[in-house]
Image (tube, rainbow, N blue to C red; front, side, top):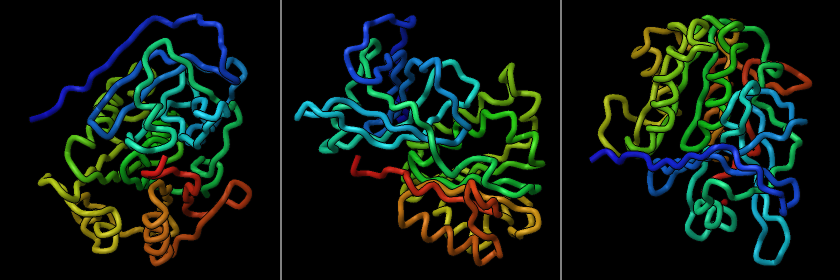
Length: 276
């Protein structure tokens, strides 16, 4: 039985900050018992590139800020900031963060950084977004970024979760893009969504790594195997996932790049997994 996301909304609340670098929660959506997203006010001075992350958090029990790196899921042009998070019952931060409500405050350090940005890639024809779980967050930003569709003929979003319900955040986002009044015309038919599951039956199954290594995704989508002349990739997941995908991409002849040295693929090394 499909769970209906529980969402709360309210008009922007002008609360007097009492936390350092405080921002106010404007919306919270619980997608499953393990996943939720939330939106907060955006500092007027914050400028970032779609795909970057910032440090956010709450005050710890010791009275000191408890911060973790979170990719900004909203695009650079959005007036608010969106985040997508896992819930960890005994996680130092998410055990508290998952209970935030509209009107609450979080700490947000306005110093964005990250490697999943267009500047870190050489020009190409196709762009692959490769993610597991909440590693989708930076791509939620980049899929809403006009530059993504101006630079590439085809954008492929590969996202793997354990169960179908865990794909809902990404599915609803992708479905909304073609009708988006701001970027719908740019997206057109350029965006290809390839979600898979590993535990629950679904029309596409298997890990990102397996579907790439076996060539199944290329056959399913009618695309050629990756090659360094045309394909670019961005990777965001657990450390083990990143290591495995990196090896596969290098097997296709792609090289890892960085902001200061653009190449054919980049990996987000600051992604925080199940221990947050």
